[in-house]
Image (cartoon, rainbow, N blue to C red; front, top):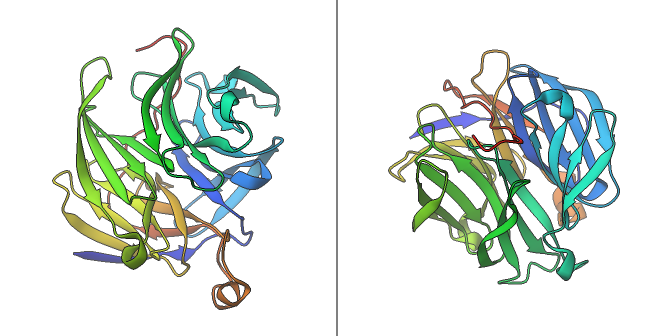
Length: 300
């Protein structure tokens, strides 16, 4: 078992940092602060993250993925909708998967897949069981509901060979794996790893490395875990605050793990003990990530 220690790498803190992504095309790290509707772009190296541009939308901003043509901006999850955020900060709605459940259910984590489509989950504001869903969007087909009866639909990732998809439902503590065919369709849902929330924390956002292992932020667990494709737990990155929320691999050398954290639901007493809560952390892990998938107008 490998052990790493994450160190704080921002001075600013965020209420609910999420959707941490390394964009190797732009050479920058990005993430969101969900409840404030803010999106951040930053220069990042092995010890420091410096914001160079930020955007703000009205309401909840929960997920971002780049457009293949970077000049077009990002596809995002905002409130009950999927939208395009352009580089000037303009927002153009594409679809409203959870309009029928507004305002109690909102979009949550999401990612583009290797075929150029956008996957995004949803969750109820009261964390109600069975109220979340997992959607897939492409302009050629619109919104497709892939999974229902979820609680907090969360982290998503695809293996380097595109043959496995990983997906988190946080409250039951489940990380499922799916077989993926050549067209990106999923089948053979199976339990990949399962965490006991009260004793271990809950799986949250994830990323995949070049060796096919997944790195999962453990909300309430003070760590990020690495699981081999077999499901074996092979590494832990200790984070000195309770709520790691998402992670990405990148940076100057391509081997830095960046971790967003949150201050949400933390008591004043706990915040006093953990003054770095809500900041970003980083650790050198010695393995590269996989290139960030982007949304594409034509399915690849």
